[in-house]
Amino acid sequence: LLIPDYDLAIQQLEAASPGFARDESDQTLPFCMKPNFPVR
Image (cartoon, rainbow, N blue to C red; front, side):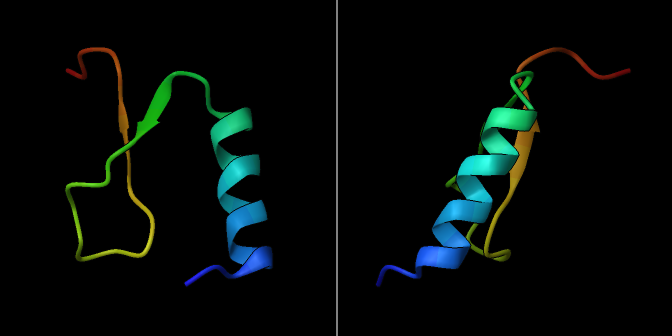
């Protein structure tokens, strides 16, 4: 299922947050990102 506005929003979030990667393993949220660096 493709939702153009949703897909655009995801692309914009990914572009604005280069230090984060989309976490597709978490199916509880429609969109989840995780940092690609250690968080303390």
